[in-house]
Image 1: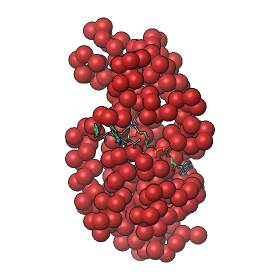
Image 2: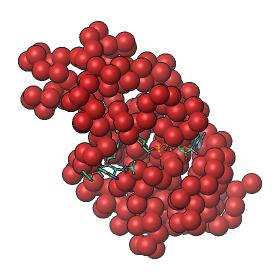
Image 3: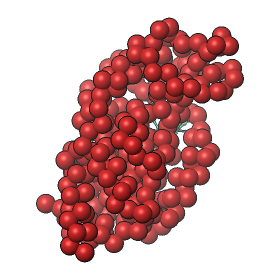
Length: 247
Ligand code: BV8
């Protein structure tokens, strides 16, 4: 049962912003970061996803990414990813900001997207800075090397690294302009993205949270829809399509 506040708001929304976290990929079989299955039991993302860890032990960091790429390489976008692609089609002004580096949103053909923490299928030369896609699963060598001989790193944003300025500027612009935000599958603990829902709210925007459980975002949200994003998002799309047909 969709709550009227949410459906009325979506029906009158001019600019929709969607923010996703690891939870939207959970139903594709990809472990989340802070769920009890954990991304890699004996390691925390905060311990491995850092420039310090990579400088100290690039092999272990790359083993972790190779393991994740193996899981993600077998995964498919789920109904939640596909529903967000449909939301893009339903709103003239739309942006998806994803914290996920798994590339699953991109595989739905979505266009207006910012991968604010990068993409683990893209690599960057630690000497030249140039990026390229590296799709090998498993990796042929760990760590992988550039033609110039330097070590390649995953082209993702690690803890302690700044978000690329272009991505951040685009995100801040849309946070100012959007009138509704749907925030999906994030525990709301990683900054600066964790601050975005409150900023939208302070700008007079309407915040809808989709999660299986309450998070710090629940206190900010105008409405929290608790359940699997793979169930809730398609329901929202179905309702919106019916509303548009009724005129
Ligand atoms: C920055 C890429 C400026 C890598 C990621 C001390 C020193 C330096 C920085 C800091 C510091 N203290 C704080 C900071 C800031 C730091 C930060 O926020 N730390 C946290 C831990 C407190 N942030 C940064 O460093 C950022 N940069 O601030 O730059 C700066 C620079 C220098 C010094 C100071 C400041 C960069 C952060 C980016 C880190 N990179 N990923 C990689 O993935 O390999 S973060 C990583 O966490 C992923 O991107 C992930 O997406 C993200 C957030 O996690 P979630 O997506 O929310 O996932 P989580 O598992 O937590 O939650 C899943 C949710 O889904 C749950 O709520 C669950 O209930 C729900 N769920 C589960 N199943 C479902 C579901 N919901 C719906 N349906 C389901 N089926």
